[in-house]
Image (cartoon, rainbow, N blue to C red; front, side, top):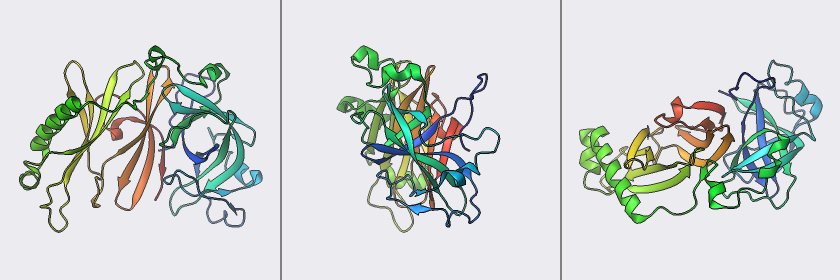
Length: 310
């Protein structure tokens, strides 16, 4: 599903996922289309983006792109247009579209653009994935990002400070109990007695509250054949006591965690928290931009844009 809309406005508010293209540019896909075999004669090869999950676009002429912008609610983007790049933690930079691009797959294909940062020294977070919206002039004051701890608490974003050992120990115990509730008897025989390996990502929602996204794997070394380590991911709140809000289950049978990977957390404004997540399935990857909601799994959250990678 691509780009849900917020109604009640003259111009529907839309959000898209952007990936870092190089040191000063990002790539964003605005619309899902069907090229029907016509792209080859129009395309000009360009270098692949730095963000390795973000497809390999080709440059396309404006006349070709225009043919896909006549649908209702289609985004009418063009070279020179400006958009807001939402980096996370309340920081917004402005990009100007400089190259029109597209990407074709056997199923879904996309049209979009490369956007060049108007502020060359704008800090791009190392994860390389961001949200984009139409440019709002009033937001220019946030381009340099919050300056104080109090200002940071006003916006959603990932927290770079490592989680303390005591909190991680509590989370491990909490998830171990959950594993014993959810795992089959056979899975418990393999995972039981093994401390889970954790990846803990603290983040802040738009009201300033702390949350954790945690991926956990119980790898005993006793797995055989096609049996993989037991794994799950959980959204956790620390108050009033540390507790699980909801869990995410393995989405692939491949020999990896098979769990949603949280790439970035951004502030969407109006008290909304956006999450950018990599979803792995057998044979494909999906990038999802969704509105975070306590107690909801990713599949139950409001999806603003999704891009099928493979």
